[in-house]
Image 1 (spheres, rainbow, N blue to C red):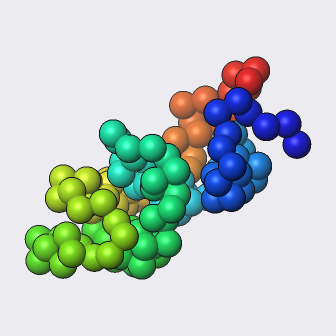
Image 2: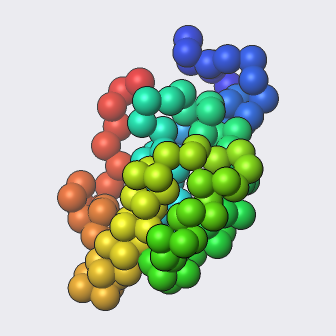
Length: 129
């Protein structure tokens, strides 16, 4: 497989590059998980988040929106001490807010995936990279 110039020697990043990067995702819950992780990425390298992905899965109910949406301020307090995640309250609260939005979209549009993919006629855009 051709390697991109930005790729590193880190096995976690190489696996992400080779098997996930640039691949269309149609599963609503996988899209939610990616959105949640991307929100943690702001100001940090993507590799930092990839290395913390399993801890985020533990902290956020394996990214099950119906559970995350009911998290309270006390839950966020607990997560502020949870090991190996970003301890930024606003970022953690963002995942809860995203879960609520996800559930609303699922209710209003039937599918988070269909809602997102509708913006590009349900077809990936090939950027020619």
